[in-house]
Image (cartoon, rainbow, N blue to C red):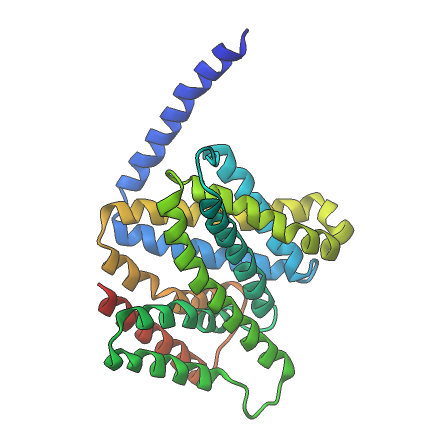
Length: 301
């Protein structure tokens, strides 16, 4: 049997599988797809946090990004032929921001409840949205989000780990804002989804040294590798696919408002999956960030 006949047989299978997935997703309303994507990301984060007892955060990030890169590249090969040096530089910057965003967030996740870590990280894209609006009145959303962060700060406890967690969460927010800007620029320069595929390769190269060194022999454990693959699927591959399908069928404004619920969903996942019970002022802080994010999303449209 020739290679051509093998590939010819595989292609109809991929088409049937793709049609089956499309039919399944079409049966779910677009808001349901967004909520499923959010839930998938946060359950993946919860699964990752459970791995921190066996691996440091940087090693878990390596497993997540490497898994996502392998699957994405298998589906969408990056196309760099004909691109300029400027195009490649933008794509590399996109990949670097993706890797540093995940490294920072997982360090925050190791020190903070998942709902709080996500709420702090949301300050990055929220601030970007308000700055992009160029309306002074919209600064109220930044003030509201800042109030949420103040409520989360461990003023009375003096807990150094919490302060470090807040710092890492804020850093993740900065890289998330950079990720949003560079994502749009990469999408305009790379054909189809090959820009994301290229960025995932860059991100994997970036995190591999620190992830492998910090993980050591623990990365050779089959059970850990399996869980790490699950983190990659839940945190990257599945939500990205669901979000793309949702954006195809709903206005971006509605999509953005639904995505603003992510800190609240993260807090609920932390409660029911990880047993992280938040205090009233912490729920109030997350509410401030959610409301601010919804407001910033509405003003951009």
